[in-house]
Image (cartoon, rainbow, N blue to C red; front, side):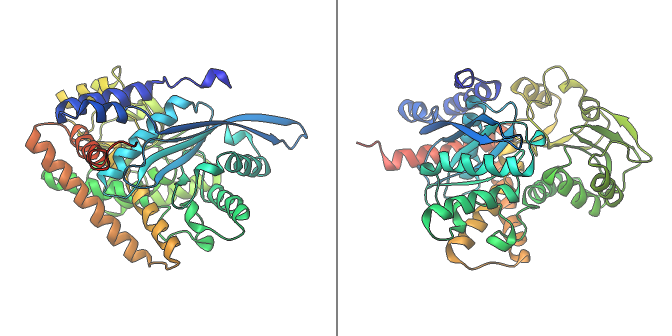
Length: 420
């Protein structure tokens, strides 16, 4: 375990760098700035489980709370082979800015287990989830920390977490997690929320730039819940889906892909690769194809210093967390590319998670039309606020979004003071 306990990671360094730059621009109080650079708490646990073979395997798990100044913490749980403390800490910090930016009464959190979920059976995944939940149970609760699905986890993972927590309480506690199946207290529209939120901010970006979505050529990297939903909704609005990638490869057709047929192909084969009538590319090549809108919705650090000058899109909407490095950001800014940052573009998931949490606490559930309308209102208001701030301050959308998010958290610290 000890080789994964260092806070250092590329994403952590990037996140701290962003914080320091924004703190200087906001003239933050030095004491508050210093507090923002550290998580409130970080828990590292061993997660031993009995494998199907009968042998015991031990995995490393993490749960980090960045701050609780605006409310209980909120953040996803990811299962991936490269999960480490630095990455989880950075993601928890980004969740703080995201929740603050969207006006949600949450601080940021993140969790993860270092594993390869595709190599585990359903039974092993259940054992892993339940044991991990038991190990972090003192940190979670509907008024403490509310996990949600992320990379490598899903509705079933959240159902196992909720059940494990509920068994220790002697009662059903739907508000302990979000992203659950509808039958056990989930929210209508939660699965589609992140992809739908991306489309809502793209509407606003296009409007401000004097463009339309219809007829625009779109490339989506990542065809999971986020990328597939965004692709389908944009296609229905008349956009041309020219390229799609998943973890196995990419397909490209400049004349457009039929999303309905593509989804059926993926359901049957498990990948976009092999879709008839399309050229086969790799994940790096698909990013550089000629298009109007690029949605990196897979993993981090996909747009870097070595490929940013070959990106041809005029608008990038970050569906993944941290898909663009700071060096690439500067290149894209100089080239006039509009980048809608992750803390804004992919915030639809946590917004509808908030709706689900509220519904769970009240035991009163809303119609999907209500969820969708409220999500569009929140996303639109946040985007326009960020656009106005960026215009006023002469900064890009990422800097404006971080300024707004960090400012509200800093004000919370100032108002509440320092105990004791």
